[in-house]
Image 1 (cartoon, rainbow, N blue to C red):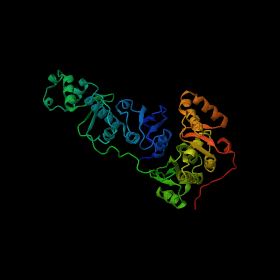
Image 2 (cartoon, rainbow, N blue to C red):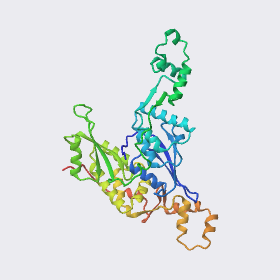
Image 3 (tube, one colour):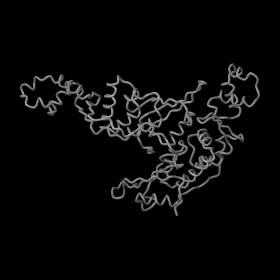
Image 4 (cartoon, rainbow, N blue to C red):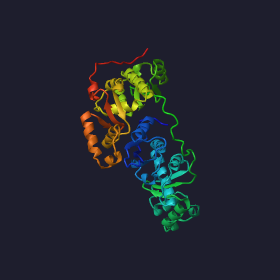
Length: 412
C-alpha cells in the first residue's frame, strides 16, 4: 500500500458503523490516506473486521464520480482507487472519465464496482480522446478530415462540402460505443484490464514502523547536486540504519539531505513531525526517533488509544517535546472506549451500581444531560477515541508543565 502523503487528495469520505441502538459514531477521512490514517479512522468510527459500515463519498475531485460508487464500497478499495487516480496524468483522467461514462450509458447509470473502477485506471492503452469533438457534427468532421472514414477518401472537395457530418459522427459513435464528455469525445477500443481483484487492497498486517520518514537529497536547487532518489526510513531506527539511508540517497553530510514525515502511528503527529524536521533541517531527528520508540511501547501495551485521546485533548500548538512528555505519563490516564456520547458515559457510570428496573430508568431519564454534568464536575473530556479520564485528577494540559528536555541528531 502506498504511503506517500504528497498524493493529491481525491475523496472525502464519511465512515459510519451500523448500530442497532441508533448511535452511529462517524468520522471523515480524505483519501488517499496512509495505513495509519485508515486504521485511525476505523478506530474512531468503532469499526472492526466484522463490523457493518458505510463509506459515503461526501466530495470528490472528479465531480461526476460519486454517483457511480456503490454505498457498500470498502474503505480500503476506495483508498486504492484514490491512490490510482492521484497518480494519473490529465490525459489519463480524461480517458478514465470516458470509460466511466461508457459503462454508465450501457448500464443506465447504475453504480460501478470499485474493482472495475480500479481496473479502468489500468486500461488506457486503447483509449483515444478527440478534444475538438463535443457533438456528432464535430466528431463526423474530425473523422472525415483525418481520413478515419475509408469510404470518403476519394470524395471530391465539391461533394465533401455537402456531407452530413452529424450523421457520420453519430454512426461512428454508436458503432464504437464512444461518449462525449466535457473534455471531448472518448472511446476505448479494448477490454478493461483485469489487474486488480476484489479484496487485493485489504490490509494483511499492520505497518512495521511507528513513524515513516522519507529521506531525499537536495537543499541546493542545483542539478549538479540534487537527485530524485528517495529512501524510506522506518522508525524507531538505529544510527546504522540512518547512516545507510543517508548513503543510499547520495548525501555526503547531514546538510545535504532532508527529512519528511510520511506516516505515523498517531496521525495527529505526522504534520507536526514533518514541520519540526523541516524547520530544524532535521536537527530534531533524535527526538522523533525517541518518540517513535515510545509509540511502539504504547502499542505493545495496548495504550495507544489513550495516548491519541490525550493528544486530542491538548491545544494544537503542542510541540514534539510535549508529545514525548505526554507519552511518558500515559499511566495516569484511561479511555472508556464504550462511551461515544455523554449519555454513553452516564450509562457506563450507572452500570457500576445495582439499579432496579435499569432499562426503564435509562429509557426515561435525561442521560445526555446527566452525563454532561458528570463530565463537567470530574473534568472528563469526550474525544474521538472515547471518554478520557484522569486517574490522578490532573488534566492533560496540566501535565505539560515539565522541565526542558533535549534530543539532538544522534549521528555516530
